[in-house]
Image (cartoon, rainbow, N blue to C red):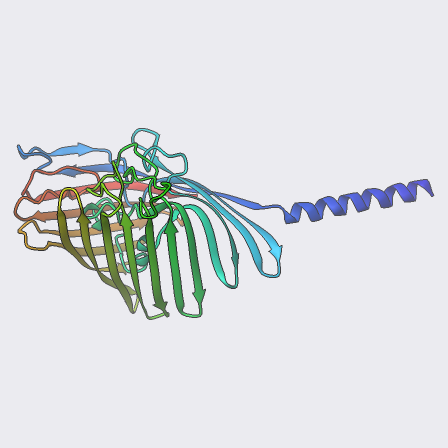
Length: 366
């Protein structure tokens, strides 16, 4: 009899332990490692060329992430994401040398959508994901506007909801960028200043519609500055505003994507009311099940100025497996006036000089 009681007790303890384990978070470790070589012309005023290993990206930025979920019952989940960028050329962290510079947030997910708190991707980043066929490629629109691949907000409340074919989302940041470590993603505007409700605030919003054949997304983004902030936004009245309209359509197996981004930067000191427009159109076509060709043309127009730029790029990707691929990109940046937009993200070019480049690399995801 004692043995029976003992066995029953152990079974109950084991069942309770198993129930507790089921309730715990399920954590996934994931990442991308991507590196290669790039050759570019006219990297300085003397017209010198260069061969280098890029740090920011190849075909996709390298990263290491942790994603977790816990089922709370009644369709509600607790979620978190911790994701850090990696510079494979030097082994350092990305996003201004932050441990989890790509994302670091916790939230709740249910039928109502997803609500998150922390550092997170904002709506400008999400708005072109389906229409920008080049994405964060080394030669891409990211070269023209470095904010596009770095559209993230610190100290932010975020919401994203999918309802049938519609997507709605928004973020509100109390201090959009706490990093001053340098680099394109570090703009030194931490915010959360007592008595100043505008200092380094940022609001983004998104509305989209998608079906199997086509989709369209629009977004709005306004950020405010403060003392010491980068990009000329040195007062809390200074602001940088971007409005986007993006769309794509499937023509058989070919995706055609296009969009426009209107930007106006108003800085109080010095006086600067600058308006620019960015337009792009591209296509992605599978030549074989393993071989894909992508192409894109983007135009950057500066209002009232000859400093315009045009980007043209082709990329060929061969998948060795579901997780591993080799790729090569051929690109050209035409700079008008005294424009100095480099072809490669994070690169350099002589003012007013055109630049051509060739890149090749290897990408593995896990």
